[in-house]
Length: 356
Image (cartoon, rainbow, N blue to C red):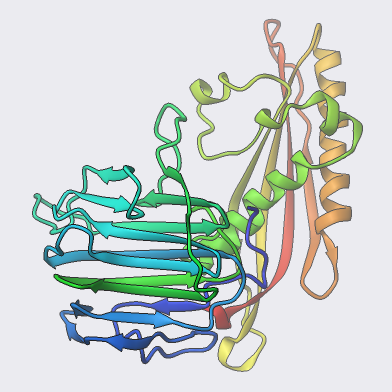
């Protein structure tokens, strides 16, 4: 999948209230199919019941749920069911409080959980389930990779289903009691945790701006960006420590959002706002001598500016670059061999707040 656009958002946002009576704009409610539920300490408690979204469209789905067990459902009890008309994924109870099963006929389980929040300082499970045709992915606590860069989410083959309907259901259907603390769902695509974030503020900032710029530079056809800078060396600057930057081969590009602000809310009720982002791009190069590194880095920085200005910075009604500042590195030490040019751009964007 790709980073969610400004027109792709969470179509259902339940934050502990009745899933059949959700409020707010662009917020589609579930309907009660069987059993029932009740409010419980700011959450929605479902005991042997089912709620359903019946008008979900498309064949790519993402659901994020935060929940805990009150009474452990029996082995095989369905907690989450996503169907696209031909494929299906179900998240089931294993009858234990420390694991979940993906699909009835699958041996894939998610282990090491604390579904009853019984541990010291417990943290409720955040579970993201995506259905993209024949491929299902399941993430826990919005984590994609561990400290070594190894993927920690589960990928399985989706089940087939012949009903021909596109539905989303939450339970438990059969036995047990579950507190649902939050449920976010969208039919706009199968999004990973870094493609559609739970917070729209974080989505507009990190995903659509920061990671969006990284993807734009990776996809560029300009000579230096296309042939001289590996995609693996164009990254978001989560960690700019020398230990981390030394792991990335030169030349490299680090993108970082250093600050953002909204000078004023220009529409009544704050439905849409103007937001300014300061985006920093660090271009690091090495050369046979400092002159070569300097010139190579300046060529790369120039292509970065040209690419971002022409492709992301001239949409007059929604998105513009309104200023920039370039700091060109100079050799100050006889032993210095690394050149780091810094480009800072200020973006002005129009943000639709109604999806929040």
